[in-house]
Image 1 (spheres, one colour):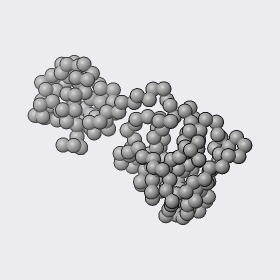
Image 2 (cartoon, rainbow, N blue to C red):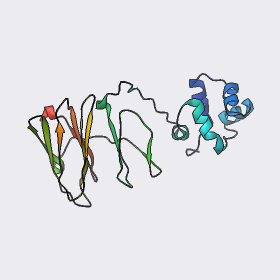
Image 3 (cartoon, rainbow, N blue to C red):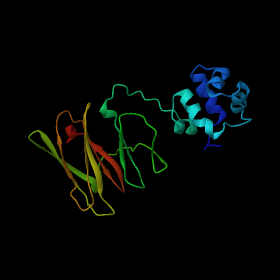
Image 4 (cartoon, rainbow, N blue to C red):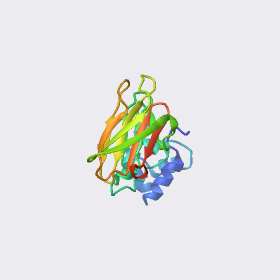
Length: 197
């Protein structure tokens, strides 16, 4: 039953929210015996109750079904905790400043893990006045290309979308940039610190 909300998840969320079965049942318009049946695995909530259950616990339906609640501790909005997601269907690039449940085309997207650039993804960063000129030695064919570059500081992100048959280069204002990211559509996300160059 991994693809549907389980009684164990409901019980865990109810207890975490310091609710009794009766209190939850009143919020949902069902009996406390019904909640008890869910929690003991003797029944499952009707699909029409998924949204109200998620609402009672202040989480998304996706979090409810997956059993993984998102605890965003990034309340200070530090951009250095940025996460990038890329849809394998349409190539949509999504950025978050902390934990998130991201879906595109019905697929749950996981945050990309950045690696150090390798020989196939050599990057050069040149300082020109108040900008970094970033160039990646990489082919830009329709099948294999750099999709985007981003420069991240503690309070700002600059992102440039790149396209096949274009150039794998971008300019970023230097002000406070701590990391530069780039994404290869075949090999994933890479990052460097300009200070390390």
